[in-house]
Length: 467
Image (cartoon, rainbow, N blue to C red):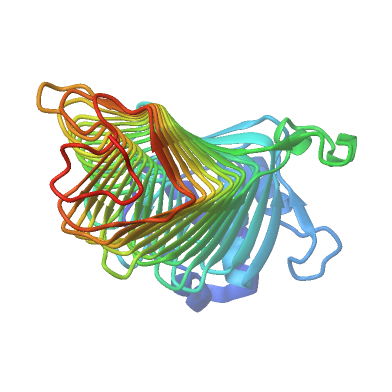
């Protein structure tokens, strides 16, 4: 095991003091603690405190919650013990800041400030923060190994930095066959040289909101009938690779009541990269930015599935296509979702689809802009798309060559069912719908008040459209 500084050698003392009687020397090796490494000198009183703090209340082998005082070394010791026993429930001191100053590496070479999670472990944060020290070497905060299962509640994870470009995840890495559940927590100011500035998921991860009172360090019984429900906040994270906040790399990700804001990437997907399965509900993507495609979300695999329900994507920006969403293959489903006020430099101010399958149902695509391209609201290239019971309104393509403020369709099957395309604008005709192939527009759809024309000037005639 390698260490980031002398201070990390306290891991060994904590492990020996709290685990040796449970796991023995072979057990220590199995959980990634090198018994041959010399422990740093530490006071007898501090060692006794670490051992006592990790003893489960009630003596039932770790099933009772362990209450930890405000000391990062005690947290590390408790995680080492929980790994050895296969399970643990930890409760942090309310509003405490646990500062990590160095790292360890797991058997796969992934470095993190806390021991890799190998068992079933839950941490009740009570509004506490776990942060990498500003002057520490780069390392992520949490690493869930294969077979590990981590639950975080009412906790802030801050300042993690994965310096490698492989698996990513500055705040949390969930490896293949690992699981994580995040409830009413905050991930902020994390970064990665790879994908997923805050979280990289290769396993199964669930991110949900919850009770605000515990997140504020109060007793959860103070909340009243959900009135204090909080979003999980994922904000101001950064990646050099895809997914400024989250990378879902062939994993399974569920999000409900999550607010992803002000995240950014030098690559695709300002907030989220999906190559696997993502199901999103009651979630807000706001002010995220990508240097390449997908200001908020990029879907980048032919087998990827992204479902958004009762959600919103607002004021996201992209230096290429897809101000809010860029779909490069796969299946994108939007239901009762707003795509509002997003901006792309190139095609698809709101949504850009390339070869993927898109279904948009009971949603709004409004006030989006492509600065130099086409399709202010929706640009569809070579991929079948259906818009049903949806409003495409007040989108713009204002460049000198701008066409189709509302919808651009190129070499693709497109169906509009009970959909309105109204008050969109572009410099060149048509301002409403432009298509070079025959599309379907049912009798219940409306295409009106677009400038300079609704559909006139489109290479292919648009059914049920006049002017």
